Amino acid sequence: MTGIVSYDAMETIRNTNEWLGATARAIGSYPAFALSLNPAFKLMSAWGRVTERSFARMVIKPGWQIPAIPGTDGQDHIVYIEPVMRRAFGDLLHFRVARREPSQRKVLLVAPMSGHYATLLRSTVVSLLPDCDVYVTDWHNARDIPVSEGKFDVEDYTSYLVDFIKHLGPETNIIAVCQPAPLALAATAILAEQEPEAQPRSLTLIGGPVNPDAAATEVTDFGNRVTMGELEHLVIQSVGFKYRGAGRMVYPGLAQLSSFIAMNAETHAGAFIDQIFAEARGDANEGDKHNKFYDEYLAVMDMTAEFYLSTVERIFKNLEIAQNNFTVNGTPVDITKIKDVAIMTVEGANDDISAPGQCVAALEMCSGVPEDKKVQHLEPGAGHYGIFAGKSWRLNIRPLVLDFIDEAAGPAEAEKPRKRRTRGGDSAMTGDDLGTDGKMAV
Image (cartoon, rainbow, N blue to C red; front, side, top):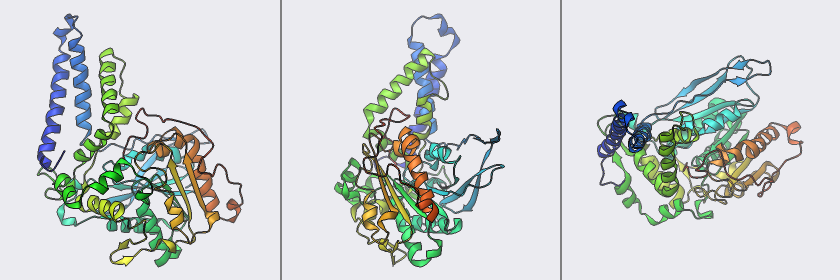
Protein backbone atom coordinates (compact mmCIF):
# COMPACT_ATOMS: atom_id res chain seq x y z
CA MET A 1 0.00 0.00 0.00
CA THR A 2 1.39 3.40 -0.89
CA GLY A 3 0.69 7.03 -0.28
CA ILE A 4 -1.73 6.90 -3.25
CA VAL A 5 -4.13 4.90 -1.09
CA SER A 6 -5.56 7.01 1.72
CA TYR A 7 -6.13 5.84 5.28
CA ASP A 8 -9.90 5.69 4.82
CA ALA A 9 -9.46 3.88 1.49
CA MET A 10 -7.34 1.19 3.17
CA GLU A 11 -9.99 0.79 5.85
CA THR A 12 -12.69 0.59 3.19
CA ILE A 13 -10.78 -2.16 1.35
CA ARG A 14 -10.36 -4.09 4.60
CA ASN A 15 -14.01 -3.65 5.55
CA THR A 16 -15.18 -4.72 2.08
CA ASN A 17 -13.11 -7.91 2.17
CA GLU A 18 -14.47 -8.74 5.62
CA TRP A 19 -17.99 -8.25 4.25
CA LEU A 20 -17.27 -10.40 1.18
CA GLY A 21 -15.99 -13.16 3.44
CA ALA A 22 -19.09 -12.98 5.63
CA THR A 23 -21.32 -13.06 2.55
CA ALA A 24 -19.55 -16.07 1.03
CA ARG A 25 -19.71 -17.87 4.37
CA ALA A 26 -23.46 -17.26 4.66
CA ILE A 27 -24.27 -18.22 1.07
CA GLY A 28 -22.04 -21.32 1.09
CA SER A 29 -23.63 -22.47 4.37
CA TYR A 30 -27.23 -22.10 3.14
CA PRO A 31 -29.07 -25.31 4.18
CA ALA A 32 -30.57 -25.95 0.73
CA PHE A 33 -27.09 -26.32 -0.76
CA ALA A 34 -26.50 -29.33 1.49
CA LEU A 35 -28.58 -31.32 -1.00
CA SER A 36 -25.91 -30.76 -3.65
CA LEU A 37 -22.86 -32.99 -3.84
CA ASN A 38 -20.86 -30.20 -5.49
CA PRO A 39 -17.90 -29.39 -3.16
CA ALA A 40 -17.84 -25.78 -4.41
CA PHE A 41 -20.35 -24.72 -1.76
CA LYS A 42 -18.24 -26.13 1.06
CA LEU A 43 -15.18 -24.42 -0.37
CA MET A 44 -17.11 -21.14 -0.70
CA SER A 45 -18.18 -21.30 2.92
CA ALA A 46 -14.66 -22.23 4.04
CA TRP A 47 -13.12 -19.39 2.01
CA GLY A 48 -15.66 -17.03 3.56
CA ARG A 49 -14.88 -18.12 7.13
CA VAL A 50 -11.14 -17.74 6.66
CA THR A 51 -11.45 -14.42 4.82
CA GLU A 52 -13.94 -12.87 7.24
CA ARG A 53 -11.88 -13.82 10.26
CA SER A 54 -8.61 -12.67 8.70
CA PHE A 55 -9.79 -9.18 7.79
CA ALA A 56 -11.75 -8.73 11.03
CA ARG A 57 -8.59 -9.44 13.07
CA MET A 58 -6.78 -6.48 11.58
CA VAL A 59 -8.59 -3.87 13.66
CA ILE A 60 -9.00 -5.80 16.91
CA LYS A 61 -6.50 -5.63 19.75
CA PRO A 62 -5.87 -9.18 21.00
CA GLY A 63 -6.40 -9.98 24.66
CA TRP A 64 -3.57 -11.29 26.81
CA GLN A 65 -5.43 -14.48 27.80
CA ILE A 66 -2.79 -15.52 30.32
CA PRO A 67 -3.58 -18.93 31.83
CA ALA A 68 -3.38 -19.61 35.55
CA ILE A 69 0.06 -20.51 36.91
CA PRO A 70 0.26 -23.95 38.60
CA GLY A 71 1.55 -23.68 42.16
CA THR A 72 3.65 -26.08 44.20
CA ASP A 73 0.74 -26.32 46.63
CA GLY A 74 -1.45 -27.93 43.98
CA GLN A 75 -3.47 -24.77 43.40
CA ASP A 76 -3.69 -22.69 40.25
CA HIS A 77 -2.73 -19.04 40.72
CA ILE A 78 -4.79 -16.66 38.60
CA VAL A 79 -2.86 -13.93 36.78
CA TYR A 80 -4.22 -10.39 36.99
CA ILE A 81 -3.08 -7.75 34.51
CA GLU A 82 -2.73 -4.41 36.24
CA PRO A 83 -1.45 -1.08 34.85
CA VAL A 84 1.06 0.46 37.25
CA MET A 85 1.89 3.50 35.09
CA ARG A 86 -0.43 5.04 32.51
CA ARG A 87 0.85 7.28 29.74
CA ALA A 88 -0.71 8.67 26.59
CA PHE A 89 1.31 6.47 24.24
CA GLY A 90 1.88 3.41 26.39
CA ASP A 91 1.30 1.84 29.81
CA LEU A 92 3.47 -0.20 32.11
CA LEU A 93 1.57 -3.42 32.89
CA HIS A 94 2.18 -5.84 35.74
CA PHE A 95 1.21 -9.51 35.59
CA ARG A 96 0.32 -10.10 39.22
CA VAL A 97 0.08 -13.74 40.21
CA ALA A 98 -2.59 -14.10 42.89
CA ARG A 99 -1.67 -15.62 46.27
CA ARG A 100 2.02 -15.82 45.39
CA GLU A 101 4.90 -13.85 46.80
CA PRO A 102 6.59 -11.72 44.11
CA SER A 103 9.55 -13.48 42.57
CA GLN A 104 13.05 -12.15 43.25
CA ARG A 105 13.51 -12.00 39.49
CA LYS A 106 11.80 -8.75 38.49
CA VAL A 107 11.65 -8.62 34.69
CA LEU A 108 10.64 -5.74 32.44
CA LEU A 109 9.80 -7.01 28.96
CA VAL A 110 10.23 -4.16 26.51
CA ALA A 111 7.82 -4.87 23.67
CA PRO A 112 8.50 -3.61 20.16
CA MET A 113 6.51 -0.79 18.63
CA SER A 114 6.72 -2.02 15.07
CA GLY A 115 3.18 -2.66 13.92
CA HIS A 116 2.08 -5.35 16.38
CA TYR A 117 0.66 -5.07 19.88
CA ALA A 118 2.61 -6.07 22.98
CA THR A 119 0.52 -9.27 23.03
CA LEU A 120 3.01 -10.50 20.43
CA LEU A 121 5.03 -11.43 23.54
CA ARG A 122 2.21 -13.43 25.13
CA SER A 123 4.03 -16.76 24.97
CA THR A 124 7.19 -15.09 26.28
CA VAL A 125 5.25 -13.74 29.25
CA VAL A 126 3.63 -17.13 29.91
CA SER A 127 7.02 -18.85 29.86
CA LEU A 128 8.54 -16.37 32.32
CA LEU A 129 5.66 -16.06 34.81
CA PRO A 130 6.34 -19.29 36.78
CA ASP A 131 9.83 -18.01 37.65
CA CYS A 132 9.65 -14.21 37.40
CA ASP A 133 7.69 -11.13 38.44
CA VAL A 134 6.86 -9.82 34.96
CA TYR A 135 6.12 -6.32 33.69
CA VAL A 136 5.64 -5.27 30.06
CA THR A 137 5.46 -2.07 28.03
CA ASP A 138 2.00 -1.94 26.45
CA TRP A 139 2.19 0.55 23.57
CA HIS A 140 -1.04 2.16 22.37
CA ASN A 141 -2.43 2.24 18.84
CA ALA A 142 -1.64 5.70 17.44
CA ARG A 143 -5.01 5.86 15.68
CA ASP A 144 -6.68 6.08 19.11
CA ILE A 145 -4.48 8.86 20.53
CA PRO A 146 -5.83 12.41 20.01
CA VAL A 147 -3.58 14.88 18.21
CA SER A 148 -3.68 17.04 21.35
CA GLU A 149 -1.38 14.53 23.09
CA GLY A 150 1.51 15.72 20.89
CA LYS A 151 4.29 13.80 19.22
CA PHE A 152 5.97 10.50 20.02
CA ASP A 153 9.36 9.65 18.48
CA VAL A 154 12.42 7.58 19.39
CA GLU A 155 13.46 10.12 22.02
CA ASP A 156 10.03 9.97 23.68
CA TYR A 157 10.14 6.17 23.55
CA THR A 158 13.53 6.22 25.29
CA SER A 159 12.23 8.67 27.92
CA TYR A 160 9.27 6.37 28.60
CA LEU A 161 11.68 3.48 29.21
CA VAL A 162 13.75 5.61 31.59
CA ASP A 163 10.62 6.47 33.60
CA PHE A 164 9.40 2.86 33.65
CA ILE A 165 12.78 1.56 34.87
CA LYS A 166 13.02 4.24 37.56
CA HIS A 167 9.55 3.31 38.76
CA LEU A 168 10.40 -0.40 39.03
CA GLY A 169 13.70 0.14 40.85
CA PRO A 170 17.33 -0.91 40.48
CA GLU A 171 16.64 -4.63 40.92
CA THR A 172 14.92 -4.67 37.51
CA ASN A 173 16.12 -7.00 34.77
CA ILE A 174 15.32 -5.72 31.29
CA ILE A 175 14.58 -7.99 28.35
CA ALA A 176 14.21 -5.98 25.14
CA VAL A 177 12.89 -7.81 22.08
CA CYS A 178 13.98 -6.68 18.61
CA GLN A 179 13.20 -3.06 17.66
CA PRO A 180 13.56 -1.56 21.18
CA ALA A 181 16.99 -3.14 21.80
CA PRO A 182 19.00 -0.02 20.81
CA LEU A 183 16.60 2.27 22.68
CA ALA A 184 16.72 0.10 25.81
CA LEU A 185 20.50 0.34 25.59
CA ALA A 186 20.21 4.13 25.35
CA ALA A 187 17.80 4.30 28.31
CA THR A 188 20.23 2.26 30.41
CA ALA A 189 23.07 4.61 29.44
CA ILE A 190 21.01 7.64 30.48
CA LEU A 191 20.37 6.15 33.91
CA ALA A 192 24.00 5.04 34.27
CA GLU A 193 25.14 8.63 33.78
CA GLN A 194 22.34 10.63 35.40
CA GLU A 195 20.95 8.34 38.13
CA PRO A 196 23.30 5.38 38.68
CA GLU A 197 21.28 4.21 41.67
CA ALA A 198 18.24 3.70 39.37
CA GLN A 199 19.91 1.75 36.56
CA PRO A 200 18.73 -1.83 35.98
CA ARG A 201 20.56 -4.87 37.27
CA SER A 202 20.80 -6.60 33.89
CA LEU A 203 19.99 -5.93 30.26
CA THR A 204 19.14 -8.71 27.79
CA LEU A 205 18.88 -7.69 24.14
CA ILE A 206 17.14 -10.19 21.84
CA GLY A 207 17.47 -9.91 18.07
CA GLY A 208 17.67 -6.12 17.94
CA PRO A 209 19.21 -3.75 15.35
CA VAL A 210 21.83 -2.16 17.62
CA ASN A 211 24.13 -1.84 14.60
CA PRO A 212 22.07 -2.44 11.44
CA ASP A 213 25.16 -2.13 9.25
CA ALA A 214 26.81 -5.13 10.92
CA ALA A 215 24.83 -7.54 8.71
CA ALA A 216 22.64 -6.67 5.74
CA THR A 217 19.02 -7.85 5.54
CA GLU A 218 16.06 -6.95 3.37
CA VAL A 219 15.04 -4.50 6.10
CA THR A 220 18.38 -2.65 6.12
CA ASP A 221 18.58 -2.68 2.33
CA PHE A 222 15.16 -1.04 2.09
CA GLY A 223 16.13 1.61 4.63
CA ASN A 224 19.31 2.44 2.73
CA ARG A 225 17.85 2.72 -0.76
CA VAL A 226 14.75 4.81 0.08
CA THR A 227 15.11 8.49 0.90
CA MET A 228 13.24 9.97 3.85
CA GLY A 229 11.18 12.11 1.48
CA GLU A 230 10.14 9.07 -0.55
CA LEU A 231 9.34 7.12 2.59
CA GLU A 232 7.17 9.87 4.01
CA HIS A 233 5.31 10.23 0.72
CA LEU A 234 4.80 6.51 0.28
CA VAL A 235 3.64 5.32 3.70
CA ILE A 236 2.61 8.19 5.97
CA GLN A 237 -1.13 8.84 6.23
CA SER A 238 -3.53 10.92 8.28
CA VAL A 239 -5.82 8.89 10.56
CA GLY A 240 -9.37 8.77 9.20
CA PHE A 241 -12.42 10.32 10.80
CA LYS A 242 -13.52 6.96 12.27
CA TYR A 243 -11.00 7.02 15.15
CA ARG A 244 -10.16 9.26 18.12
CA GLY A 245 -6.79 10.09 16.62
CA ALA A 246 -8.36 11.60 13.50
CA GLY A 247 -5.85 13.85 11.80
CA ARG A 248 -2.76 12.33 13.45
CA MET A 249 -0.02 11.44 10.97
CA VAL A 250 0.80 7.74 11.22
CA TYR A 251 2.44 4.80 9.52
CA PRO A 252 -0.74 2.66 9.20
CA GLY A 253 -0.72 -0.84 10.56
CA LEU A 254 -2.43 -2.08 7.39
CA ALA A 255 0.45 -0.71 5.30
CA GLN A 256 2.94 -2.37 7.65
CA LEU A 257 1.04 -5.65 7.42
CA SER A 258 1.17 -5.59 3.63
CA SER A 259 4.96 -5.27 3.78
CA PHE A 260 5.18 -8.08 6.37
CA ILE A 261 3.22 -10.40 4.10
CA ALA A 262 5.09 -9.35 0.96
CA MET A 263 8.38 -10.42 2.54
CA ASN A 264 7.14 -14.03 2.65
CA ALA A 265 4.12 -13.97 0.34
CA GLU A 266 4.46 -17.56 -0.84
CA THR A 267 4.60 -18.94 2.71
CA HIS A 268 1.54 -16.98 3.80
CA ALA A 269 -0.44 -17.86 0.66
CA GLY A 270 0.24 -21.54 1.26
CA ALA A 271 -0.84 -21.26 4.89
CA PHE A 272 -4.17 -19.67 3.95
CA ILE A 273 -4.88 -22.16 1.15
CA ASP A 274 -4.21 -25.03 3.54
CA GLN A 275 -6.53 -23.46 6.12
CA ILE A 276 -9.36 -23.07 3.59
CA PHE A 277 -9.18 -26.78 2.70
CA ALA A 278 -8.96 -27.66 6.41
CA GLU A 279 -12.14 -25.64 7.03
CA ALA A 280 -13.87 -27.36 4.12
CA ARG A 281 -12.92 -30.81 5.48
CA GLY A 282 -14.00 -29.85 9.00
CA ASP A 283 -10.49 -30.27 10.39
CA ALA A 284 -9.98 -26.63 11.45
CA ASN A 285 -10.87 -25.37 14.90
CA GLU A 286 -10.75 -22.17 16.92
CA GLY A 287 -7.46 -22.95 18.63
CA ASP A 288 -5.52 -24.60 15.83
CA LYS A 289 -1.99 -23.58 14.88
CA HIS A 290 -3.10 -21.34 12.00
CA ASN A 291 -5.67 -19.40 14.00
CA LYS A 292 -3.41 -18.96 17.02
CA PHE A 293 -0.63 -17.56 14.88
CA TYR A 294 -2.64 -15.35 12.54
CA ASP A 295 -4.90 -13.97 15.28
CA GLU A 296 -1.73 -12.24 16.49
CA TYR A 297 0.07 -11.73 13.19
CA LEU A 298 -2.81 -9.93 11.48
CA ALA A 299 -3.68 -7.75 14.48
CA VAL A 300 -1.76 -4.59 13.62
CA MET A 301 -1.53 -1.12 15.11
CA ASP A 302 -0.58 2.27 13.70
CA MET A 303 2.71 3.93 14.65
CA THR A 304 3.07 7.68 14.93
CA ALA A 305 4.73 9.07 11.81
CA GLU A 306 7.50 10.70 13.84
CA PHE A 307 8.38 7.45 15.59
CA TYR A 308 8.55 5.43 12.38
CA LEU A 309 10.48 8.06 10.44
CA SER A 310 12.91 8.81 13.28
CA THR A 311 13.57 5.08 13.71
CA VAL A 312 14.47 4.69 10.03
CA GLU A 313 16.51 7.88 9.87
CA ARG A 314 18.31 7.85 13.21
CA ILE A 315 18.69 4.13 14.00
CA PHE A 316 19.09 2.67 10.50
CA LYS A 317 20.35 5.44 8.22
CA ASN A 318 22.42 7.64 10.54
CA LEU A 319 23.39 4.79 12.90
CA GLU A 320 23.19 7.12 15.89
CA ILE A 321 23.13 4.30 18.43
CA ALA A 322 25.76 2.23 16.64
CA GLN A 323 28.12 5.21 16.40
CA ASN A 324 27.27 6.45 19.92
CA ASN A 325 25.89 9.75 18.61
CA PHE A 326 22.35 9.47 19.97
CA THR A 327 20.78 12.39 21.86
CA VAL A 328 17.60 12.74 23.91
CA ASN A 329 16.17 16.22 24.36
CA GLY A 330 19.47 17.69 23.25
CA THR A 331 21.55 15.72 25.77
CA PRO A 332 24.12 13.25 24.38
CA VAL A 333 23.67 9.62 25.37
CA ASP A 334 27.03 7.93 25.98
CA ILE A 335 26.80 4.13 25.83
CA THR A 336 30.27 3.83 27.38
CA LYS A 337 28.87 5.21 30.65
CA ILE A 338 27.27 1.81 31.31
CA LYS A 339 29.63 0.10 33.77
CA ASP A 340 27.63 -1.78 36.39
CA VAL A 341 24.92 -3.44 34.31
CA ALA A 342 25.33 -7.04 33.15
CA ILE A 343 24.56 -7.31 29.42
CA MET A 344 23.49 -10.30 27.37
CA THR A 345 22.72 -10.52 23.64
CA VAL A 346 20.71 -13.25 21.93
CA GLU A 347 20.62 -13.80 18.17
CA GLY A 348 19.13 -16.41 15.84
CA ALA A 349 21.35 -17.94 13.20
CA ASN A 350 18.51 -17.85 10.65
CA ASP A 351 17.14 -14.43 11.61
CA ASP A 352 16.36 -12.55 8.39
CA ILE A 353 14.94 -9.50 10.16
CA SER A 354 17.81 -8.64 12.51
CA ALA A 355 20.67 -10.79 11.26
CA PRO A 356 23.44 -12.15 13.52
CA GLY A 357 25.95 -9.41 14.22
CA GLN A 358 23.46 -6.57 14.56
CA CYS A 359 22.61 -7.23 18.21
CA VAL A 360 25.91 -8.58 19.55
CA ALA A 361 27.48 -5.27 18.51
CA ALA A 362 26.13 -3.88 21.80
CA LEU A 363 28.78 -5.79 23.77
CA GLU A 364 31.65 -4.06 22.01
CA MET A 365 29.95 -0.69 22.37
CA CYS A 366 29.65 -1.16 26.14
CA SER A 367 33.39 -0.79 26.69
CA GLY A 368 32.86 0.24 30.30
CA VAL A 369 31.27 -3.08 31.27
CA PRO A 370 33.70 -5.75 32.53
CA GLU A 371 34.06 -8.71 30.20
CA ASP A 372 32.86 -11.13 32.87
CA LYS A 373 29.50 -9.30 32.88
CA LYS A 374 29.01 -9.71 29.13
CA VAL A 375 27.30 -12.75 27.61
CA GLN A 376 26.43 -13.59 24.03
CA HIS A 377 24.42 -16.45 22.57
CA LEU A 378 23.76 -17.42 18.96
CA GLU A 379 20.94 -19.96 18.62
CA PRO A 380 21.49 -22.41 15.76
CA GLY A 381 18.58 -22.91 13.38
CA ALA A 382 16.40 -20.24 14.98
CA GLY A 383 14.60 -17.49 13.09
CA HIS A 384 13.48 -14.12 14.37
CA TYR A 385 10.26 -15.22 16.05
CA GLY A 386 11.83 -18.34 17.51
CA ILE A 387 14.41 -16.57 19.67
CA PHE A 388 11.74 -15.06 21.92
CA ALA A 389 8.62 -17.16 21.47
CA GLY A 390 9.25 -20.58 19.92
CA LYS A 391 10.84 -23.86 20.98
CA SER A 392 14.30 -22.34 20.73
CA TRP A 393 13.29 -19.77 23.33
CA ARG A 394 11.58 -22.21 25.68
CA LEU A 395 14.07 -25.04 25.56
CA ASN A 396 17.42 -23.27 25.11
CA ILE A 397 17.35 -19.50 25.41
CA ARG A 398 15.00 -18.99 28.36
CA PRO A 399 17.12 -21.12 30.76
CA LEU A 400 20.21 -19.16 29.73
CA VAL A 401 18.47 -15.85 30.34
CA LEU A 402 17.28 -16.95 33.79
CA ASP A 403 20.81 -18.09 34.68
CA PHE A 404 22.13 -14.76 33.48
CA ILE A 405 19.60 -12.85 35.61
CA ASP A 406 20.51 -14.92 38.67
CA GLU A 407 24.23 -14.33 38.21
CA ALA A 408 23.64 -10.59 37.85
CA ALA A 409 21.75 -10.56 41.16
CA GLY A 410 24.83 -10.66 43.39
CA PRO A 411 28.20 -12.19 44.26
CA ALA A 412 26.73 -15.47 45.46
CA GLU A 413 24.91 -16.07 42.17
CA ALA A 414 27.83 -14.81 40.10
CA GLU A 415 30.01 -17.67 41.36
CA LYS A 416 27.76 -20.25 39.70
CA PRO A 417 29.30 -21.91 36.64
CA ARG A 418 28.10 -20.55 33.33
CA LYS A 419 26.24 -22.80 30.95
CA ARG A 420 26.13 -22.67 27.17
CA ARG A 421 27.49 -19.14 26.91
CA THR A 422 29.03 -19.23 23.45
CA ARG A 423 28.11 -17.85 20.06
CA GLY A 424 27.39 -21.31 18.77
CA GLY A 425 25.29 -22.58 21.66
CA ASP A 426 25.02 -26.32 22.14
CA SER A 427 21.69 -27.14 20.58
CA ALA A 428 20.82 -27.78 16.99
CA MET A 429 17.15 -27.13 17.62
CA THR A 430 15.57 -26.00 14.40
CA GLY A 431 12.16 -24.53 13.77
CA ASP A 432 9.60 -23.22 16.21
CA ASP A 433 6.02 -23.84 17.20
CA LEU A 434 4.67 -22.02 14.17
CA GLY A 435 4.99 -22.85 10.52
CA THR A 436 6.21 -19.34 9.69
CA ASP A 437 9.29 -19.49 11.92
CA GLY A 438 11.32 -16.35 11.75
CA LYS A 439 8.90 -14.51 9.49
CA MET A 440 7.10 -12.22 11.88
CA ALA A 441 8.82 -8.85 11.60
CA VAL A 442 9.16 -7.19 14.96
